[in-house]
Image (tube, rainbow, N blue to C red; front, side):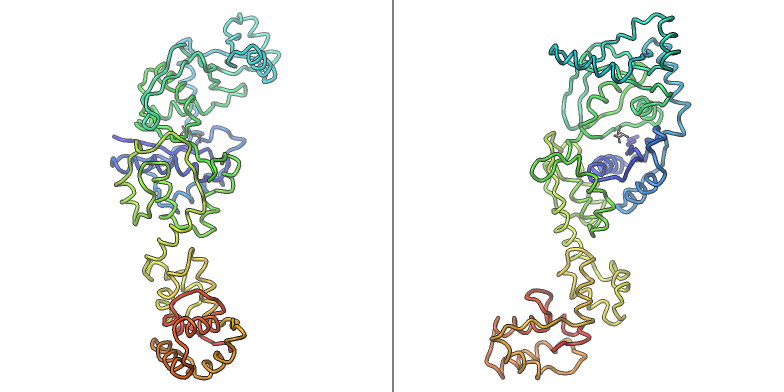
Length: 439
Ligand code: GLU
């Protein structure tokens, strides 16, 4: 059975880059009728925070990316210890004692000599008494996985055939000196134990994948299908990594981006399918195919989310936004007409505020000098509040008759006088909602 997982580290809020990963894994699982696991990668007790676990769940729920179960790496430390023991027994795990400064120096020397900065495995030649001495001096060492120096190959769901020379990769550290299990080992054990069949993650994980394939094989397991999506860049192709902090899902929510707009965008961006607003999650699931995504960096522009949000809102019936309209304080009998008047004229629900303020408080009239007399005459002909559905039609016909004005020179000054702006909703729909008229 298809099983996928989204595996965030709870060290911050999730952003659009994480969403790409979450959504692809979600859609694969749902399309196959499989299982989608939310895995909390919290082996780092210093940086992992419970508030981020809660925030990640809230963000996924907001988007409707419901997981089938939650797993936490901090609950599974025994499983990782077992795997570590097995690797030791197999002779694929060795303790190394270099300090970060020593490693840095080695890397610099290698680079100076034009060699790739790969760990030189000096620790492999340490005799037992040397290790005991180092341990006494420096504390426990780190544990590295001994890679087999051969090519590691897999067919990637997005990148196609990938081949990495293991000799160009340092033996990965799987356990730190303080005993903390690192992500690479934890992830391998989890993916195996949980029967994960498909892993989609960012292209920054390609080297991890190579080492994880070998670790899985050493532990006697086959590996899941892998697909690595390209990293997002800004609209000009600039690196987005520093700005991702400002593209947290909760910030987008705060700015009024609608879930369906964000999902529609992220489920297609960087694929050969057009980005279009979809009406439902089912539609997104139906049309999703990971192999349609390209390997090239994908440009992301937050501004693209707003037209999609607007189209989504334009299509909504009153019932879908009733709570928001009630919260604005619109009287009951005006709520539905208010929504129907305003919906084509908003980008986010936050914009409803200003249309309701206009209805409730009226607007400072905007009157050009040459229209002063005309507006005074028209206003004198305006019937008393409340206005009806036909008020605008009747009134403008009468004003046209009386002044001889027509077309734009008739309607535009009236709109500006009543709304204080040149553009906005249909006046016939707006007029019956006006609670006061400022003259
Ligand atoms: N916690 C890892 C990350 O956020 C998970 C990567 C993976 O999907 O394996 O990068």
